[in-house]
Amino acid sequence: MEREERAKELISRVATPEPDDAFKAELRERLVTQAAARRKANTALERRWVAPRPAYPLLRRAVLVSGLVLVLFMSFTGGAYALSAGKNPDSNLYGTKLFFEEARLSITGSHDSKAELELTYSRERLREMRYLAEAGVSRGSERCLNEYEELLTRAREHIYLLEGGEFDRLSAEFLRLTQEQLEELTSLQDGGGSVADMIEAAAGACDGARQSMGEQMMLRRGQGGEPMMQPGGDSDGTGSGSGADGGYQGGPMQDGGPMMQQGGGGGPMMP
Amino acid sequence: MEELDGLLARAADGDSEAFGMVYDVIFNDLYKYIYWNVGSRDDAQDLASEVFVKALAALERFEAARSTARAWFFTIARNLVVDHHRKRSRRSQSSMADDIPSGECMEDVVETEAASTAVRAALRELNEEQRQVVTMKFFSGLSNAEVAAAMGKREGAINAMQHRALKKMGKMLEEEGWNREACE
Image (cartoon, rainbow over all chains, first blue to last red; front, side, top):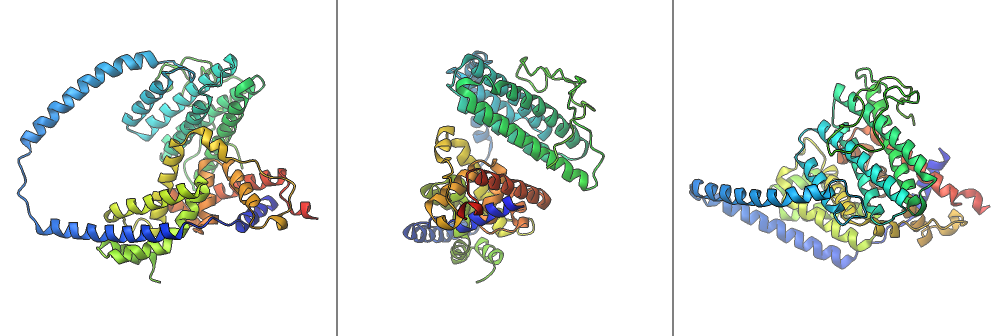
């Protein structure tokens, strides 16, 4: 409690630099002008009725252009995808690989599928970190770390949006996978070399994500939800086999063990 | 002054001056929240102006029944801050995460740059969500319910995050010698 009070006290004593007065006044004037213009435009639209133009020619043109773009896109991206698969952060094609991952996430519909995919990609980031640590390469390490943190955050946010059994299943899976990742990161910390900071930061992010998920599970349990599954801690080896040492194939949970690992003693982390 | 929700409703009905009054009421709070998230006055000003431009463009979509005006503005601001962090390279983030200056007592550093630097560095140690909670609540003065609405989470989750964030910040400040004992 004393620590919290200390933080609150220091926060209450710092001053935020004031915004520029001229900037504030100018912005206000601009916004009020825009708001007035918007009203005029809306009024004009309401007054003026325009006969709808037939949609067919426009639609046909749109279909043709879309088709052409799609053909060009497919022929280009097919090659780029094949080239970029499995690249590491020190590669010039690493950005392309991330782009395809992002594209796949964006076309994945449901929150649970997105979360699964993000967890799979987080394991791929971990594999890349291992590569960087073992090779003693620091190029691209910051980007890799950024992506790793981002994936854990997004996976967590998608899991929070789930309800009932789906939430139980994926939150348990989240804890199980991040436990494995945390263990791997801890093992890498000793030999991190030039990327030791990255490994440490990744371990911190992973631990923080686990704690937040644990809190969320506790909260939901406290709200009278269904009984929670215990995430598999796997200290006894029952149900690990996640393939954290490799096996990335670009798909969700392809190399992992069964999605629902019971028992193992590693419950959600308590605050 | 008229309540913010009422002003925003009038603005949505086309009263441009009401939008100006909304701006007067909420600009400083939004600016502070953004400033303590991005760490730069210029960036904070730019993002704050973007919040209002986006709000103006989306006025019709504001649903008073689902959210308060304040929470709605902070939701827009939060999305912009998250986007800003995504775009910014890790390197520039690190350069902002100054080390906490150590060995000074709190009384000596009231309202000094050193204290600001310490708080900024401690904030950088928090994860994104924790930082959002702390800055919305303690720099912009939002209630826990408003923070929860702005972040799309339950109030209990916000309480837990706030607790953890302050503890983490306090621990870090303590480790760097920012405590009352240092003054004695």
